[in-house]
Length: 272
Image (cartoon, rainbow, N blue to C red; front, top):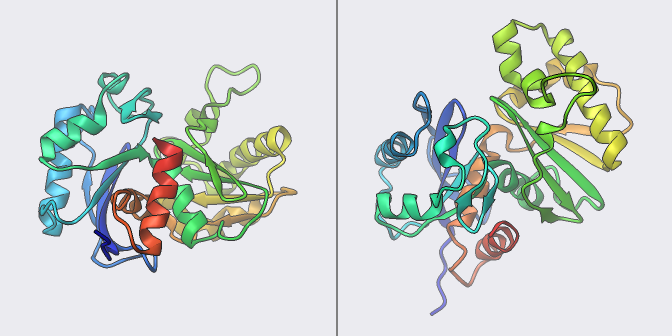
């Protein structure tokens, strides 16, 4: 049977916050206020599940008739989380998609947070219609990355963990926005770290466009103009909502009949 579903719920789990909203996937916009709760200390699976339930209860969208997608800060293959940079080590090798489905009593779709944010920007935002290699970076607790070539996702690119020459910490530990808060860095001091990071990406990959997402992207005018790159660099159109929108699109993967469901199948086809 052909359906005309155009709405879904997206939940974006991060190292410090868990956000969710109801999304119109024809237009790629939020239909509800965004609900955010803190990520539980330690970010163990049971505690994260409880926090996701709180988000869904607050949104009033616990009904399984409304599709649901969940984005998570880890390498994700076939519903299993294979890394745990900013969450408990319990998630490594964990059947996360099944865990959430059992815990929520409904079918969901599950993928890496930066990957779905990148695809949301490709479908509705700054990467739409851009040829060549686009790198989206989410600057938050860590550095998430999504690689898109001619609009096609190359999934699970953990480029935030690139090592720094002769240093004990990787770029994520040194240049994520959490370093600004932890070390009380000024915008210019942080920009010097970002300059080193983006220059390294530029040298290694020769991208055609950088897109900067994450919560700090709303302050992009404070640090992007301080960078000196050959590659254009712009804030994500959907800023910190790109993960929610991309996650919501996952929820329509088994529906048929609208452009929104085509977007969902594109995402699942490259993240599953």
